[in-house]
Image (tube, rainbow, N blue to C red):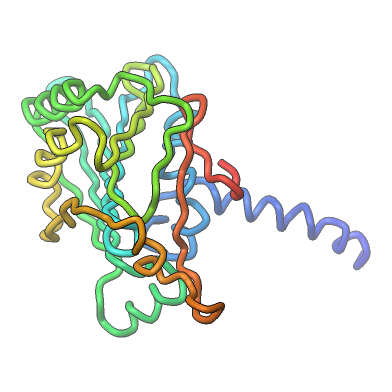
Length: 239
């Protein structure tokens, strides 16, 4: 009996890991789950896999405002005709490391904040129009890289049964005039000021990311996403 149980342990362990990697409600607020699920969450993998005609349209917009400083996630789900949409906004402040996140929480500093609200029909229409004007429907070029130590927007959606993914990086044409960003900041009701884009000196990025100097210290969780085939990948980590 004992040997039989031992044979199943690897299978159970894999199942647990796979379940943890799939986005789940509340996963962003829990540092361990956020770490395990972030790739799939940021890339909208759950939206892509469940995308089909007749499903309610859903959008997910991620604002990476230097990973170790602030990340904002906006989940939008269209409600039945005439009812607008549901908006769930989450802001993650600092604490890129799991241990650091718990220490900050114990110290009384907020790690995450979540606010849910309802968008009216006109508000949803204005937001979608601004996204369209920013080129949301265009597919990003393969090989586009998104650095966690910089500023970018990453948007995914299953809208009217079709899968979409796009990204806008600081320095790209039009990044400072997206339009939808200010609409979301005004609608999110989190009471947390957005971390506004600023210039990032590449020569200081390693130092700002907390990478070890002279082989000492702790390496921060700085990373980058790579867009390929309409999905995001994390080089050296998997999708």
